[in-house]
Image (cartoon, rainbow, N blue to C red; front, side):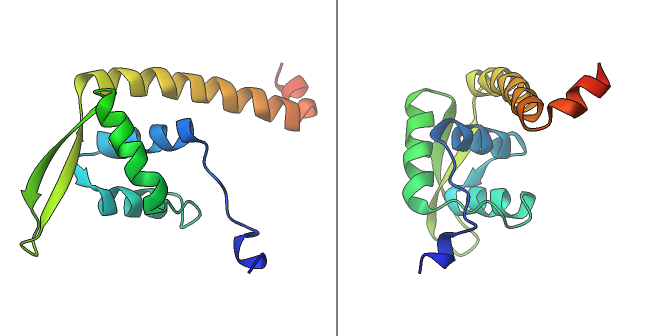
Length: 119
């Protein structure tokens, strides 16, 4: 069982929020659609469990970064469809900038020779 989780990448809460907001930037979606979009766009590397996704959606909704409405799915089932708010779009831009800075900083630590050759 330990081997099953060996290659699993755990997402930090802020990272999951960023991924959810980015996914909703492409258009409104229900929870399952969000998790499938994250999985598909990460080449099946990132898999978001419902136990992590729905608390993140509720947290983002409380922060007014996303809004949700009940709708009928193609299967005639009621689903909660989430969409990005104006505040969510603004927050996403700021977080993407912070993420870029963070990833550049980590890359510099992991491969300082490459950073020096670019300077």
